[in-house]
Amino acid sequence: MLGVWANVGAVIAGSLIGILLKKGMPEKISRAMTTAVALAVLYIGIDGMLSGQNTLVLVLSMVIGGLIGNFLDLDRHLENVGKRIENKFQKGGGNGSLAEGFVSATLLFCVGAMTIVGALQSGLSGDHEMQFTKAILDFISSIVLASALGVGVILASISVLLLQGSIVLLAQVAAPFLTDYVIGEMTCVGSVLIFALALNMLGITRIKLMNFVPAIFIPILLCRFM
Image (cartoon, rainbow, N blue to C red; front, side):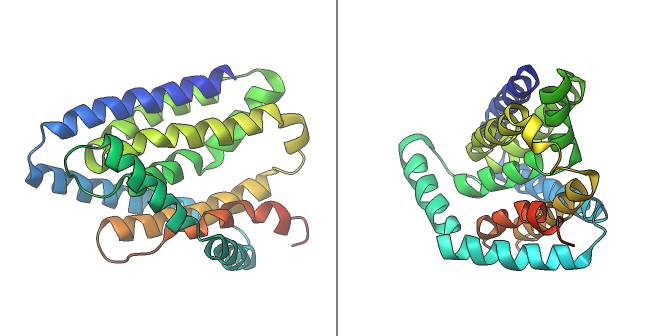
């Protein structure tokens, strides 16, 4: 779990630095930072979508995952939790809610081949090199994200711990299911959500992304039959 804790610590440390920077940032600069981050996120989403090979897997994953997320109403539950935390701890305004920062950072830190492959390598062989590399990248990203979206970004460290920690601890069991094909399709689905996230950040759409997060994991099942 060394690589996982390094990644979690990097997200927390970077987020704290970003939050401190945000406090002294003029509103005009803060809005410009949010736009800049959104445009970068747009590119990340487009780049990741090219990882997919099977369009049908993407379509079915989005539909099935969306049905599950909307049935469970994940977005509303997350917003309620976010509002309770905001009322207790978050002082002052900012661009975007705590929940928005959490979802945005979770998607960026947890989607992609580096996340899954790094955790598998760590669990199977004790090789933490890829996770250490990802920790450095996430440290830098969390500074920028937190300075634009606020304190919600730091909560994404919980998502990193749960996802990567689970893969590391269950690496022997998970490895046969997380083939290159499956990882590519999971990355593609997640990147579609990242693309949608950028549209939300730019104010173009108001998609309830949390309701579609289950779609990221549907390719694990679909790729066994398609």
